[in-house]
Length: 369
Ligand code: PLP
Image (cartoon, rainbow, N blue to C red; front, top):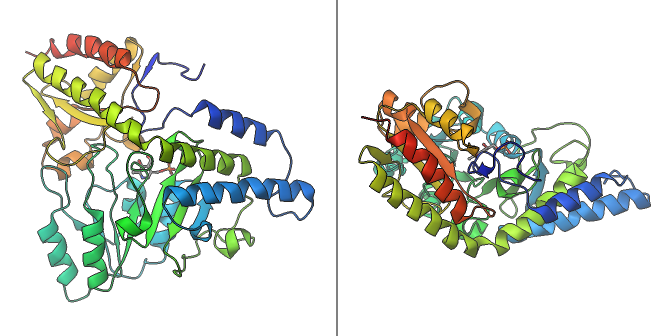
C-alpha cells in the first residue's frame, strides 16, 4: 500500500517511507477542523496537537519545548537561520545541501578530505583570519555519503572564536543522538519527511536564550518568530515521527549490518568499485558507490526496471545529470562522480530487499569490462 511504484525502496535519504502510525494520525488530524491560533474549542484542540508535537520534537534534541519553532521544512529552517547573517562573514562546508549553498552564497567554503570529512586544519585557518566569522553552518550527516562530521569539536572552536554554530541535522535525526547540548551547537535544522514523517514540515531548534532571525513575516504564530497558519496535521505527524525516531535509533545497528553486508557483497562482485566515505564515521543506512565507466543514470534505469528505487547524487539535483558537488569536493573526477549511486535504507528495509538489489546490480556490474 505504501510503496506505490517500486517494489523495493532504497531511497530513504530522498524521502523516507512514512510510518503507518504517522500516516493514520496525519489523516485523522486532516479530517478535523481548527486553526491552532483560534481561541474557540476547535482552535484549542488543534493547538494541543501542535504543543504535544513540540514536546516530542524537543525530546528528540533533549531541549525544552520553548526551543522548538515549526517551519515548512528544513529548506525554510536553514534559510531562516542564515537570513540573519547575510551581511556577516559565514563559513559553510563545501558539501552542504543546496539549501545552505543558496542561502549563503557569500560564505567561505571549508574544504573536505577525500573521506568526506571537514578538513580541520583548513577550518582552523579560516576561523583565525582577520575578519572572524559570525556563523558557521555545517551539516551533521551528509545526505549523499552518510559521513558524520565532528560537529561538537567544530562548534567548540567556533565558540572560542566568537562565532555561533548551526547544523543541518536532517539526515542525522533518528539515526544517531542529536541532543543540542551534546552537539554544542546554537541552531539545529530538521525535516519531518527524512525521519518517516510527512513532507512539508520541519523545525528549528534554538539554544536557550538565543533569538531566531525573522524570516517569514506576517501573523504572530510561533511566538512572533515564524508567521503562517500552523500545518497542524503535518506538525502532529512530525511529533509522532520524532518520538518514533528517537525510540528506534538502536534499530540502526541492524540496518548497518544490512548495509555492511551489501557493501561486502558488492566488493566481491566487482573490483572496480569505490565506496565514498567508507573510511570515515558514517550513519548505518547510507552507501554511496561508484563503479567505473557505468553512468549512474544507466544503473538507475536498469534497477528501476527491476522495481528498485535508488538515487544518484542528491535528490534535488537528479534529473540535471550534473556530477555531485559532494563527490567532486571529495576529489572524485567528474566521470567517476557521474557513476555514483546512493543506496539508502530505513525502518522497512529487509535483507530480502538487499538480496534483490544485489541480484539486479550484479547484472549491471557484469556489463563493465
Ligand atoms: N538538508 C539535507 C541534508 C537534506 O537532505 C534535505 C533534503 O533533501 C534538506 C536539507 C531539505 O529538506 P526539506 O526537504 O525539508 O526542505
